[in-house]
Image (cartoon, rainbow, N blue to C red; front, side, top):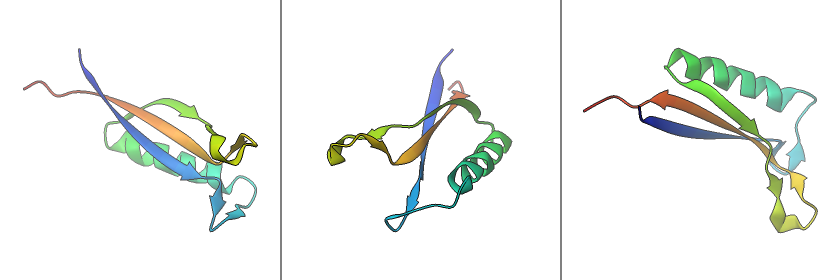
Length: 72
């Protein structure tokens, strides 16, 4: 079996400002539900650190989806 993967980034900040409490996570839930309807399975949610700032602060949610690749 072969799989394909899709990565969706949800920023924790809009225009340099932090989002309201739970706003980014609510957006994640909406994206997960929408992608599930399109046949994608949630694989993992990652919160990468922004290494460029030197503070290693999180800047987004990285949502990883998986789907079985269609055979040719």
